[in-house]
Length: 173
Image (cartoon, rainbow, N blue to C red):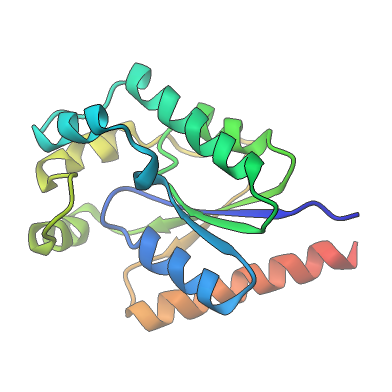
């Protein structure tokens, strides 16, 4: 029996994670999960006040997401920052076939996007902290870097194509 899939669309705030993950869930048999939905009110208020989360604040959030994934019997596409390698490792330990797609977008482009975004608890002023916290992939991490600077339709197509190829190759083994 093959394991269920967990595709994590990762990157700093404003890179397009949610947009791409939602698209994947609309095109493939994947449940969409938004990591931001699992933040506590305390964490959201902390960020709204312009303060970045600490690791002590992030761990309960990561554990809550992992629990929700474990409770699902569906393939999942998760929009999650994936800033820390230890957090990514937590997801990789789940009983799933786990793959990461890192949306790479230069900071100035994301800053412009965040300056236009309304109604989100993560203010544009925290973008520097996100880039500072983002840890490069470790040698044993399989993270596919995808250029997120193109037109949204192009990025959606590229992500979907990568996932379809990845799953096809896994099923061929």
